[in-house]
Image (cartoon, rainbow, N blue to C red; front, side, top):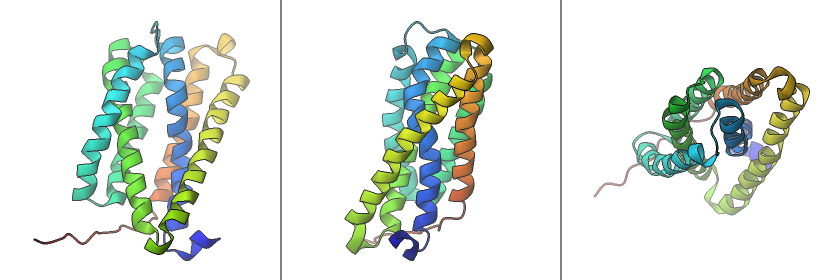
Length: 199
């Protein structure tokens, strides 16, 4: 594979594929979980603060990534995701879910997208940047299919009508496993330090 010839790029793509599975699923599943488990009347009650926070998270972590490295920024983002998933599994309080967990998920989502794209650009050879960004987008599309399929299969095997909230907790736990796996693989990616321009 061409990406294996670039140091760290293949490892990054594997890590990105793993945690993107969970992140793409959150976009689909958060509303379902909020209404079916937490008891909200409408998914928009949770999605609204999450979307606003995602915009802020993208901007904020653009600054963070400038200060740190893209690898370090992603470590922070993925650690936030682990906290979000653990909290979602055990939280039943509507206020906590709406105004703490959902905004944190939004910030983590925006920050992950920002840091991951930055790292992909840094790892890719400039002369093949368009080609490698195409590969990056392709892995994202594959994960967009696999993640929701994993969520749906878990709920199919553990019928919520039978197991209730426990079925959704296990479904979230499967996403947590994907993020942890992506986090572990990400630790083996190179830490690229950019040379700052001097005036």
